[in-house]
Length: 377
Image (cartoon, rainbow, N blue to C red; front, top):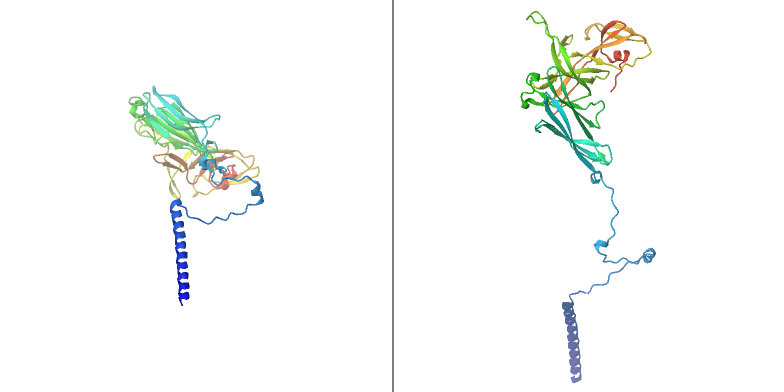
């Protein structure tokens, strides 16, 4: 029993020693971790490189950002393309109106090495360099050129009743058959007072945008109903701007009145007709045609008046028939706001013709075709 007790004591002593040694080992590991600040991690598993990769030189894993290979360039968008080199210049034109001097100043941008140019802004100035009027336009680029261009010019004019300046503008690209625009400047109250006061000089309205062509400035005579003062009629002379306006088959010449008293532009004519369908606002205008006649016989319905209420005559038109185009009668719509004036044919169009000496009115497309005026545009 004594030997058995001794054995137990020895085993117990050995166990205590082993435990103490293990405790000392754990404490040593914690002390080492506290000193180095590093926690042991298992080594990562590296993938095996392919044969091609083994032959290439190794790339350091810590390459500086500045030495990194650049990404391939991306295609530049329209907004990223740098604009071309532009040359800027100011141009001045002198204009004399009623013995007074004015200047048209245009600020022009040109693309170096080309003839491409556009007006960025323009000013009309008086003799003291005071700005009478100014207009500006946006400038944009596309494919190394201007996306659109604006051209400005001016000329002075003198008429029977006044004197002024006509500014012409054109934007490209433009709508088909567009004649750009014109703007009138002058002395209000006409020639009686036009140079008496510089404050009377200015625009007679916004620009007129032309669906056709500006022709010229002229004088329009108007003979009103006879008055009984002296028993004679008085012929009234008006200064007008003349425009070519397309109807769809031919052109009419449309006059715009320069009202020197009010300092405004307005339709030269206002006409009211009574027809079988009631009152119609329309006038007769000169016309210009480019006839393309057929070489086959045909016929037209010829009315004695520009009115469907009358019974027409059926007139044969031979290829050798002589056709004269006398006048047109049509409504014309006048549109005006603070920025623009425009006008266009708006309604039933009639033309007066003379076929082998016989006069009358036609208005249907079939009749226009018969006299060589097909629809176009």
